[in-house]
Image 1: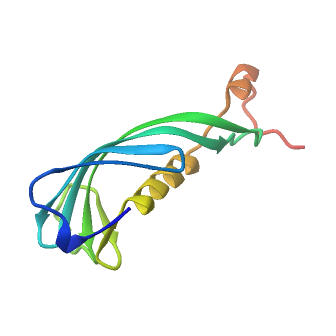
Image 2 (image 1 turned 135 degrees about the vertical axis):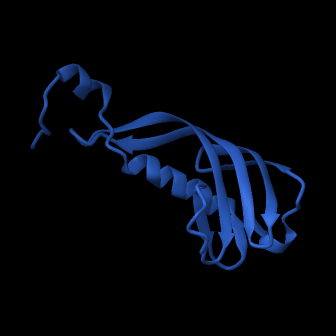
Length: 125
């Protein structure tokens, strides 16, 4: 789902959108000419590979999303908020969900079998 920055309302608007077995629910609104605020929750399931044995598992995703989207390059270095720069003047919820899933998958994940094993080293096959 894509929405042009100029069409984002200033009053919080509800969003509920599903992509890749994960659902984003919450609100979004324009807080300035080039900034959109997202307050949402990302929930669902995704596959992830164990960093130790390489076996793929399905994990539950339940992440709070609280950030700003910038229409182009964001230059305010004093902001304490997480700011994501978007291209083409579009708020792209598919891209937001995929980016969050990629971030989760890049974390160091250990499956239940490896946790039970108690081995401190990665396995080589």
